[in-house]
Length: 94
Ligand SMILES: [Zn+2]
Image (cartoon, rainbow, N blue to C red; front, side):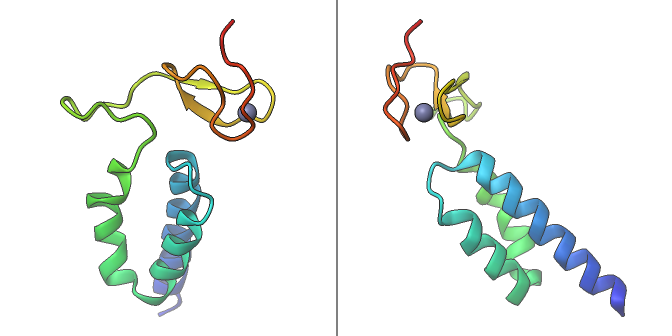
């Protein structure tokens, strides 16, 4: 039965890091992590349905991710249309 434990922990870690990359809110990945550990059968399928659409800069009409730019100062991913970093307010215009 240990295989299920490792599967759930594996999924929880994958979702945690995946959500970290996709959301600008620092709290969201932790909520997913906790939710997956307690309710894996509900939250793992749910994450792949709704969690992955919570991407920075998704085009509303095509649902494709917009091009992003990494802040050179703090490493935060921002939409290419942003003039300043959403985290540290660093100027992103070259
Ligand atoms: Zn920044």
